[in-house]
Image (cartoon, rainbow, N blue to C red; front, top):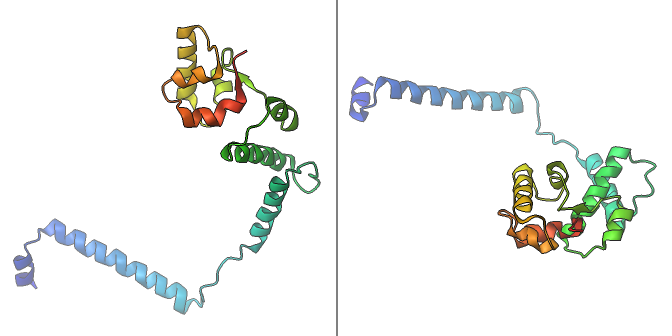
Length: 171
């Protein structure tokens, strides 16, 4: 064995690492074997049907856009449904009327000329650093004249503007 190790020319520390790795792998295999064979675990799978059914029910409510029937849904889930509906609309790039957004889903259109950093971070895809950049740029140019001017802020391109344009105003 020593001759074999000299031929391979590993140091003592390298040999220790190799032995450690082999022992960890062997231990893992022994544990797996014990769980499967000796403990009688026949590979039972978790039944996801209950959570799948709840997901389908909530998805159907979103797709039907009917969240007024919230008897079986808690208020937190209702708010989540509203947010999901809003995000689905922005993903589909459906043009939504400002009045529809504010009355149907109780979402406020943000004036980017007066909004605080906290209000700006509520916009989809706008984090704290982007909100700060918007405020800095707004102060430099003394306000945005039209919605599209927000694309002059570093970090806001056409794609991000498409996601937020229905939630912002300049007046």
